[in-house]
Each structure stands twice: as structure tokens, then as C-alpha cells.
Amino acid sequence: AIAGLLASEKNVPAFFPYKSVEYADGVKGDEGGISLLRNGNDADLTTLIYKYTAHGLSHGHFDKLNINLYDKGNEILSDYGSARFVGVEQKYGGRYLPENDKYASQTIAHNTIVVDESSHFDGKEKEAEKFPAKKLFSEIGREAVQVVAASTDDAYKGTHLQRTVYLLKLPGGKKLVADIFSARSAEEHQYDLPFQYKGQLISTSFTYKAATTKLEPLGKRNGYQYLWKEAEAHVADTLAQFTFLNGQTYYSISALVQDSASLLMTRMGANDPNFNLRREPAFIIRKKGKDQTFVNIIEVHGKMDPVVEISSQSYPSVQQIKLLQQDDDFTIVVVTLAGKELIIAQCNKNFAPNEKHAFSKEGRDLQ
Image 1 (cartoon, rainbow, N blue to C red):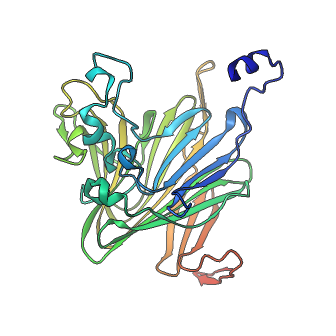
Image 2: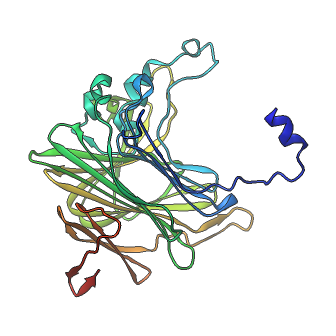
Image 3: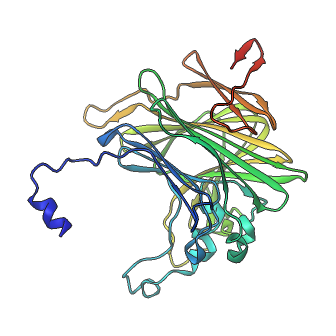
């Protein structure tokens, strides 16, 4: 009936007028939720999805505080989804493949922090069902700045995870995602933050060592055994930038590295003799310590025109990222883009919308 109505209607718009929206999860609406932040219209629509829901029974994945990014009708940052060829008899009768549990639902197949190469809740569904993530605050009503913050203390025992994502539109129309993800623990850990990107690697600001003659799996369990380690870099006290091309648009991840980090480039396909998994890449930022904060700016920029064979604005405009403060009270980040400063200041404990805050550091007075 709907298809027939659309076919008979002559004035159906080419694009749906999508708006930013949030949904609460749980029977009573008190088990986290999901936010869809949108900017732009029609073919220039950008959508950032932030998931802080309940687990979702047997269909749930171990993906607390996960993000996905879409732009101009394309997937930019994705997660694997389900490992299944629906209706294809040759592939396990069209049912869920063994890799669905062993890889697709594991945390490393998503865009959120993995601690010590183990999945959230140690990969146990019954435990995950007990603890939804907690939304801290959000503001989705303004085009220039949209923000959502959420946290969990339960995905890993003894570790607090808090992620704040901003979808920004700067003067002149440039779009950015600012991603501030902190992990705090009394114990030493390895923290991996993967970005499952769609596209072709174009350039990096760091020197890496590529595995050109022999590939090895990234790990032995919890989904890591399905990832080939294609390249690795070790960096310290720097701005690490990773640029890829999707369609005709460039995307850059600019990552603040304080102290040291390992940067990994991986691809699915290890330990997969039946070719059940898609061969998709990921960029992983690895840090070690008790407390770590990942500050990443994801920039939408430029254009590659295949007709005239010219690229414009193909380099990222982020020049520097500084973390001025990160504690229980405030997070203050300064991003330098094309010679201008973007200051991101957020309170980490008082989220009342009308509350006023003041901050002064390095000659900057904020309120």
C-alpha cells in the first residue's frame, strides 16, 4: 500500500527531511538510549550515531558507547553488523555464521574502547543484560554544536569509561566530530580504540612499518584472532593523522598522543578459511596505563573530482590538539585548525542545563 501510494504521488521529495533525534531504551525508558545527531540536508547529510543502550538479549553486541558515522549517503565509520548471508544456502544455510558470535558481536568489531583485548562484560550476555550505559547529558537543538555524553562503570570491573561526542559545524560550513573518550582505573591496562573505516587509505602523518611479506593475527581470542595486523607505528607526544577517501570526499582522524601510543592498521580475514568475513580495514589507537584519554577529531573535508582529475582541500586542517585539563571537574580541549582555535570545555560532574561554570588556564578565561 505504501509503495503504491509513493508510486502514484508526483510530489514525493527526493530526500527525507531527517532531523536529530534521541530514543530512550528499556521498558520504562531508563536503560540508556541512542542518539542520532544530524547536520546538513539531502545529499549533504551527515549523521553521527551514538549508542549507549541496554544490551538487547541475544541480538545484542558488546558495544557500549559505540559510534557510527554516515556522510553523503555513505558509511564512513561502521561496525560489522551480523555475520550472516541471509537466504544464501551455501553459506551455513543462510543462518548466522560461527563468526557472528566469535567476531561480529565482540567489542573489537566496533568503534569503542577494548580493555586488555577482552570484550565488554567478558562477552557474557547475562551479565551485559544487567547494566545499561548511563546518559550524562545531551544538546541536539543547535546546528553549530550538538553533543551527547554517556558513561559506564560496568563493562569492565574497576574501569570507568566516559565518552562525549560533538557534531560541529564551523563558520564556513566545515563539519567535524570531536570525540573525547576517557578510561580510568586503579590498575594498569591496555586500551584499544578502533575505527572501522570505509574507504581507501590516502596518507598518514606518522611513519609505519607495513607487513609486506608475512601477516600475523593481531591476537588469539575475543575477535582479535580474525584480524590481520597489516602495519604498526609507535609514536610519542604528537598529533597522529590518518586520512582516507570514501567516494569523492576525504576524511581525517587527528589523534592526540600524550606520552606514547601504538597505531595499528588491521584487516579482517585471519583464521577465516571459508571467507565468511568481509575484508574490511580498521585503524586502532592503542595506549597503556591506568588513566588514559583519547581525544580525536574526525574531519570531513575536500573533494576528489574524477572527471577533471583534481583534488581540492585533501589535507586535514587540524594543526594541533591540546588537552589543557582532564579530571573529575572539567575536560578542556583546544584544537587549532587553519590557525584558529576551537575550545571545547565540558563539566564532568554537574550536568544541570542552567548551571554556570568558570575556568581559567594558560591565559584563557572561559565561562
